[in-house]
Length: 120
Image (cartoon, rainbow, N blue to C red; front, side, top):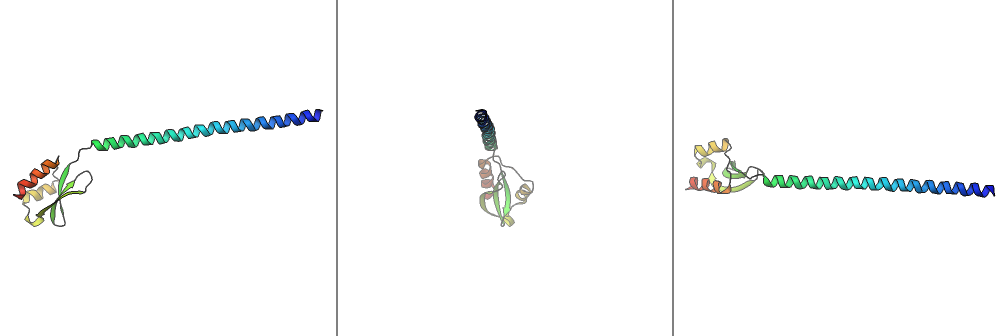
């Protein structure tokens, strides 16, 4: 009889220990998943904030010489915004000076007005 009681207590202790271990594992597992979800949400919010900040940056334009012609460049992306038919050798010295001084145009309209005044 004593042997049966000892065996029952031993099994009982093993089962209780296993259950406690499983409960601790699941509790920490959920806690780690919560941290990962929080990190992902924080990263997504940060990217959204950066995108809205980038959208608020006003686009400006500048002049450059590419392949022997005058071009209008987007100052933010450094990409060519507009190609012109004005050749470098035909440009007046004041336009060449503007290119060297990195003249900034605040809007497309300002660029178009400038180009119209020099092309006519």
